Length: 324
Image 1 (cartoon, one colour):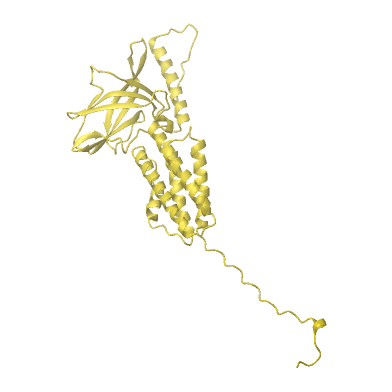
Image 2: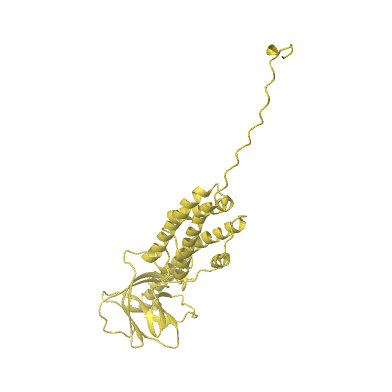
């Protein structure tokens, strides 16, 4: 818990007292941000989109360009801009080791170490560091890049995206949400005509799940996080597997793959890859629903016509005489 200074009238203001007051204010702000973010960390929505450029050569990775607004687990706000030519690369150039197959590049804020800027103010010192996937991420750090070693070191942008507090923190997170919306709309349109088919049991289970997640992703887009997006995809995938299992006609051949995906927990290192895989599974579900049309309900048999009854003779036309 942060402590405030016991101010007294006539108290001499020294630099130690003023620095302690600044520290108290900073700690209170960090605690408020920790509560607001609920322990999450990553990119924040900003008018300045996240940008990162790396130069990987000669056994070093050098950060040549970075525009970042993010929050750490400890509640530190990292507002960092790095652009143009840099004369002092002691902080932005980190040595690589060929003993590892993959590394994560992080930016670390040092709340107790401040440096002067050109405007007469001070700001926390930020440094870059490479960590292995098994290393614990510092509570004052945010991962910004994934490096893989395939003979040579290179940046992996296909399987990793920096974590974000909200999807709007990076346009590629938002693109995944839009892709999922398009798939769910297609599934909705395909399941609607199947309500009275032979697989109506599966449709009655799955259709409401699709509708619920589609509404949620559309209406809560401003507060959706990558973890919440992964949860929505897992709900769509698991709902389809359960619907096929309950239905008496359907059999899902790769059901184990669907169930295994629903057990995947959120991890910032693999979140982008897992969500992309989940969207691929949703596309597969969309294709499988096309086959439902081959299982249309058989037409109801027409009722058999009632037997015709012989007309009764009219007594007024009866003939009592003999026929000759």
